[in-house]
Amino acid sequence: MSTGRVFQLNDGNVIPALGLGTWQSPDKEVYEAVLIALKTGYRHIDAAFCYGNEVPVGRAIKDSGVSRESIFLTSKLWSTGHTRVAEDLDASLNNLGVDYLDLYLMHWPVTLNPKGNHPLFPTTTTGARDLLPEEEWSYVKTWAAMQALLKTGKVKSIGVANFSIHHLEQLASAPTTTVVPAVNQVEMHPYNPQEKLVKFCNEKGIHLTAYSPLGSTSAPLQEEAIVKAVAERLGKSAAQVLISWAIWRGTSVIPKSVTPSRIASNFEDFDMSDADGKLILEISKATHKRIVSPNWGVKVFYDDD
Image 1 (cartoon, rainbow, N blue to C red):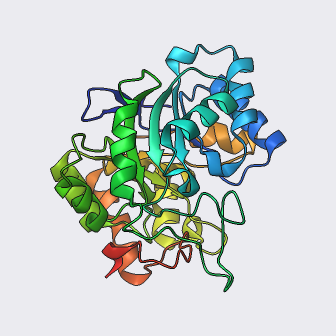
Image 2 (tube, rainbow, N blue to C red):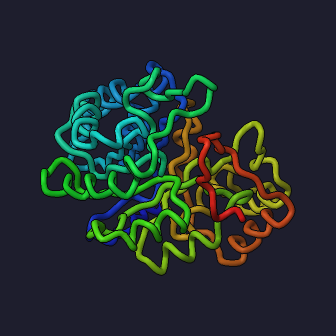
């Protein structure tokens, strides 16, 4: 990236401020995207078991010629794997063709039935999500199992994703919790800045990674007047403004693209001024919305209240 910025995690490890997201990227496209990203200079790749494309991501890493040690690689434990953490980590390592992950995240604070009618999204006879009863298994137990991974050498850091303050407080208060999550990866952009969560995580030493930083077709952030005005004044693209805004807030950021020119352009972040950062933050006062809001059948986004 232009600035080369990194953030230090609470366990002493370092995460590059800017990475490549791989969600919703088909195999051939994600292979090319990761290959191009690494050749462009990206050293932070974000993957997940649920995305179904870990194999081409891993193949691109191998084929890039970039040493494994110089890449910060993240993957995530899916919700049907909460009762078999070590086994599912091994599955991701095998898919990616690597010996270790730099960061392993619990993808959601939701435990789905591992013996249900679908390997990723099991449902009940009524069509609702097939959840394990909390008294049988909870994400607190999952976190306890993830902590044990740190002794195996297969993960360097562990963290969570899509966790609200409520979930983080439950983890912190559990007698089995001995490790503070190094990272919480959540949806963050000017429509959904999550200021309460940012303040809480900063106070607790939990680093935040922002996903969906550019919005989507249903959330046209790049067409926002403020974003376009800042971009025009600085001679930057709207995407570069949004990515740099995320880093200005002290969060790492993982924009997803499979277009070579955009992958390269997104890598050109810059140091945003406090004045511009605060100006963009004002966008949420007029429009506040989430892009990713699955119906889990259980409350997840407590901080929206």
